[in-house]
Each structure stands twice: as C-alpha cells, then as structure tokens.
Image 1 (cartoon, rainbow over the protein chains, first blue to last red):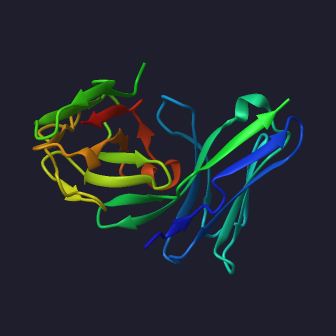
Image 2: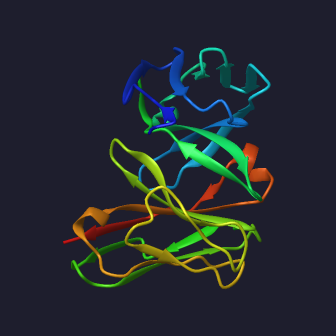
Amino acid sequence: DQQVKQNSPSLSVQEGRISILNCDYTNSMFDYFLWYKKYPAEGPTFLISISSIKDKNEDGRFTVFLNKSAKHLSLHIVPSQPGDSAVYFCAASFWIGTASKLTFGTGTRLQVTL
Amino acid sequence: IAGITQAPTSQILAAGRRMTLRCTQDMRHNAMYWYRQDLGLGLRLIHYSNTAGTTGKGEVPDGYSVSRANTDDFPLTLASAVPSQTSVYFCASSGIRTGLYYGYTFGSGTRLTVV
C-alpha cells in the first residue's frame, strides 16, 4: 500500500516559469512532509520540509503547500532554472518508538528547458 | 567533508554469490538506514538501525541482513544474490530527532547488477 503517491512521473517546464510538483498521502499520522532532490549518480538531498500543523513553508525559490483536508502537498519552484532538472521525491515522516521513519513517493522527473 | 561513504560504487555479481555493501558515516548520527531505488517504485526501506546494537526490518527485508556493531558502520549483506536484487542501494543516516523534519543524509549509492 503506497502511503505517499506522486502520480506524475515526469514534468517539463520552460526556464523562468513555475514548476509545480504534486504529492498525495493517505496516512493522517504523518508529522512532517519533505521534498528531496536527486541528480543522476548521486544520493537524494534534502530540499525543504513542512510541519503537519502548517500550510505553507518558503525557502528562496522553493515553496511547499500543505492541504491537510485533501491530504495533498505541492512544491512550487519559481522561477525554474535548468539546474533544477532532477528527480524530486516527496516523503513523509512520523515518530515511531525512539526514532523517525520516512516514507517516500515514487518520484517526479523535472526537466527545465531553455 | 562530513557525510556518508558507500562502497563499492558499482558491482556486477553472479547470482548465488554473497555480497556486502559497506556504509560508513562520520556525523555521529544515531540512526542509519538502507534503501533500494527501483524505477517506478521510488525508495523502499530495507533495514534500519535506531542505535548501535539494534536493527529493524523495513518494507523489503527479505534476502538482506544488516549489523550495527558501532555508531559509524552499517553494512548490508546479500547472502545469496538473485537477479531481482538488481538495484541502486542507498545508505542514509539521521539524528534521532532531526530526522523527523530534516530527513536523512544519503550516500551516493551502490549500483548492483545481479546476473
């Protein structure tokens, strides 16, 4: 059962425009939602996160929006740059026992074209 | 540079052979994890360790074993490799609390092909 879903495997956006990556989840117990960025032949790197009690978090060009009633979050990148071309993973975390646990979505490949 | 070191970077392995993927971190993180990445399936947790001396099973633990003798090292062993274990393997670590909102630090991965 996929608790975190990214239904769009790929997205192409022109440089300078907005990129919107979407993610849906099923488990109401998640405490935080995170976005990771992954380049080929590298490990995923943390990009931005949002607490389940917030509805928006912004960091430079990156903004994450959380809609708890719809169990949906999105990552906005404005303006998009060619260096943003990568695979983006949505993840959700919760506290279990004595540590946190992350569950990942299947990823969305973003291509920013010139 | 602080982080996670994985070895080897890539490996071609004959089916039935035993293989240990190495992972070392220098951040003194308590928790460590092994994930595999497969196309269309994202990152799936194989095994984890919340602290030295303890380990736990993730989503896809069958065919894999781990040990955590100390804080820094978390090797993953395939006792008898099968082609379905062809994948990219990522080791990760986190602080106990910071993992919740900063997530994990990942290594660069080991690309394993079982033939």
